[in-house]
Each structure stands twice: as C-alpha cells, then as structure tokens.
Image (cartoon, rainbow, N blue to C red; front, side, top):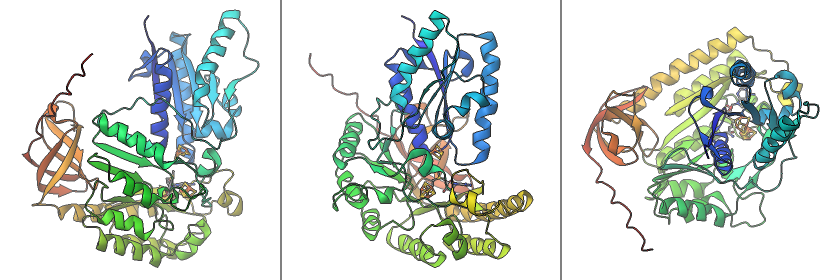
Amino acid sequence: MERKKLYIKTWGCQMNEHKSEGIAGLLAQHGYELVDRPEEADLIIFNTCMVREKPEEKIFSEAGMVRRLKERKPHLLLGVGGCVAQALGKKIFERSPAVDFVFGSSNISDIPRLLEELEARRQDGRRRDEPVMAISKIPDRIEDLPFVRQSRFQAKVTITEGCSNFCTFCIVPYTTGLLRSRLPGDVIREVSELAAQGYKEVQLLGQNVDSYGRDLDDPDITFANLLRALTRIEIPRIRFTSSHPKDITPDVIEVLAEDNNICEHVHMAVQSGSDKVLRDMRRGYTKEQFLELVHELKKRVPDVNITTDIIVGFPTETERDFEETVDLVKRARFGGAYIFKYSPRPKTVSYYKWPDAVPPEEKQRRLEHLLQLQKRITAEENRKYVGRTVEVLVEGEAKPGSGRYLGKTRNKITTIFPGRPEWVGEFVKVRVEEASVAGLFGAVVEAPTPTPAPTPTPA
Ligand code: SAM
Ligand code: SF4
Ligand code: F3S
C-alpha cells in the first residue's frame, strides 16, 4: 500500500524538534512517511512555539499558505500542536479556518485517533461542529513516543520536561507544565541503546538540566550523578542544554572538568547584566555571581565554550541597566549569544505587572549594539584556535556541491573544511588555519578510518 505523505514544520526549542521526531515516529506506525516539501504532503503538522509573539504570528500566516494549497488538494489536512495549541486550544480554529485538528503539548499519542475522527466525518459527510481536538492537562509522566530520529549519528534525549522556575517573562511553564524528570535508568537505557546503534553524539534536553531530579523523591538523583553514569557508556560525545546559572552545581563542573565523554559546552542564559532587572525577571542570581560562575568554569574546564541568551528591552530595563549588560558581555566573553527583544507574553507575571515600556526602536538599537559587540568577541575567541588541531564530527556539506563540509568541535564550534561525502557522521581532525565569527576554517589532517560494517547475526 502506498504510504501517505507527512510534512512537519517545527518552531521553537530543541525539545520541540525532538517532539517532532516523536510525531514522525508515531505516524510512521500509521502509514505515513516524511517529505521535505509541504506541496507533496497529505498531512501537514505544525509543531508550534509561543515563547515570543513573532513566531506565534508566523504560524497563522503559514496556515494561510496551507489554505491555498488545500484549494488544489482538498484532501490535505492541517494539524496544529505544541505550545500555541496548548495555550490557545479551540481559539486556533477561530484564528485559522485552514486548521483541521489541534493537539496539546502532551497529546501526540492522540493524533491517530483525531485523524480517524476526521476520516469518519468525511465519510458520513458530517459538518465540523465539534472541533477535532485533544488537549489535556499536562500529565505527570513524560509521553513515551517511538522516535524516528532525523540524524543517524546525532540523537536528542529528553531528561526533563516542563519548568518550575517561572521567570517573570517566560511562558514555558504555562505551556509545558511543571518540572518532570525521567528516571535515570530510562535515560541510561536509551543512551546505551543509541550507542549500540552507532550514534556518535547524544544531546540531553531539558529547560533547566541542572534541576534534573528535583521533582523525584531521591536525593541521589541529580544531574551530576546522571552525567557521571553516562560517562560509563561507550559513546564519544554527550552534550546537554540548557544550564541554569542559579542551579548549576560544583559537582556538575567537576564532571565537566574530568577527561570523559561529556563535551565542554555550556549554554547558560544570563538574560541581563543588571541586578535590578535580574531580580524583576526572578532569575535567582546577580551579575557578579554569574561572572564568578563563568570564571570558575573557564578556570576548571579547559576550552569550555560558554554561550548564552540575553533579553533586551525588559519593561524595567533603563539605559543604565542596559549598560550593565554590555559590561557583562565584555567581561564574560561568551563564545556566542542569542539576543532577543522582550516580547510580552500573556499569563506571565511581567505581562500583568509592567507595560511594555521600552519603545521598539530602542529595543532594536540595544539588540544591534549587543549583536555587534558579541560578533567581535566571538571572532576573537575563535581566532584563539588558529594553528591548533581540533576533532570535528562531520555533519554534512556546507553548501550543496561546494565540496566544503561542516561539523562541530567537542565544544560546539562550527568548523568548515574541504571534505568527502563518506565522512558525514564520522570524526576528522582539522588543522585550523583561519577563524571568524562564523567559525573555524582549515584542512583535514586525519581522515576517519572507515567504520567496519556490522557483522551479520546468524539466523
Ligand atoms: N530554559 C532556558 C533558560 O532559562 O536558560 C531558556 C528557555 S527559552 C525557551 C529560550 C530563551 O527565550 C530564553 O533564554 C530567553 O532569552 C528567551 N525568551 C523567553 N521568553 C521571552 C520573552 N517573553 N521575550 C523575549 N525573549 C524571551
Ligand atoms: Fe523559562 Fe525561566 Fe524556565 Fe527557562 S528557566 S524555561 S526562562 S521559566
Ligand atoms: Fe517554545 Fe514551547 Fe519550546 S514555547 S521554546 S516550543 S517549550
């Protein structure tokens, strides 16, 4: 039987990307295969994000495009899930008539049932009076899904879902629920299976990985202990994201400092350099505490690459507060930073407490100022690698047909070099000849030894 075609568009964080791998896996069991273009699809799924207003708006403009596709292909279905669906529910149908069904953050397993319901309605010609929708209260357990991973050598593994921090600007706790940790045994089993399948890199995912285990009743279940257990698995690289400056513990730094498979990259959002703004954001640390942590990490973990997120234009941020952030960026010398303009989000404390006081032009000016500064710092930090040899996991061709390949170092710096298609998914050693804000550039000095084909198991 011919398989139906599925196109998934994902917005938002890595955790959402991973959920989409779960949607693809579940629907593969129901006769769907993934395609790269919406025009080829019988079913389009939007896995949405609500963390800022812009991406939320984009979802509805893209739904308009699906509506035009439907004029040519009437059987095409559009399902909307993820954080916007969880927050807006039924309202999604009002905002876009192209949407056929809606499912919440933890209702992926309900998709096949929703599709059956739509098919039944189509066959008996019933009109859409009751919306086809599954949105439940976020459950205590993390949904178990049959993931179909996009890569055959890099895998994402969820360790926590939800977040109990309630930073005043952030909608994530409202759309994904309170912190829920997977049991260490389940994480260890999944990583071991991935290692046995030949995966080279695993990325552990959580909104705040350092809070791992705090919802469970066992003081031995901590992020540091989980990392330590994972160092015993034979897999070359283990990464994690995101770390939280208020929760990262000395024993996590200890594990990072040791010679093991845990990669030296820490993505740790600072958000602001002003103590007043950090307090208003309810982040739980001061500028100096953060800088002390950066200092400690750099001292203890050779080649650690610290990256961050920053919000400009928080409602209480004055010019002087912004200058504090500029000063922090100069002193922390991050390897890279994502800089966002504050976007008021319904349900959050800052939305109710303060008007969105910083004008858009001023937010833009602050954003550009920080971007320019960070670009200069990233380029300077990258130049420190010129003349050194780095280990790179090859991810693919930089531009199709260019013969130039790219991959990442252990500490997650993009590296570009002339390469070969058979190196994708393998490690190479690259001697760095040049560096810029875009990463490191050089030539391969040690090509991968071909991986032996697995020995067939006797029947
Ligand atoms: N849990 C991560 C942490 O605290 O480090 C961050 C997760 S959030 C999905 C990613 C980033 O989006 C945040 O670090 C923050 O910089 C940004 N963000 C969240 N809410 C925002 C808002 N209302 N306006 C602008 N940026 C926001
Ligand atoms: Fe949002 Fe704060 Fe949780 Fe990060 S730690 S997801 S910013 S509430
Ligand atoms: Fe966005 Fe939801 Fe992730 S709001 S950042 S998709 S948890």
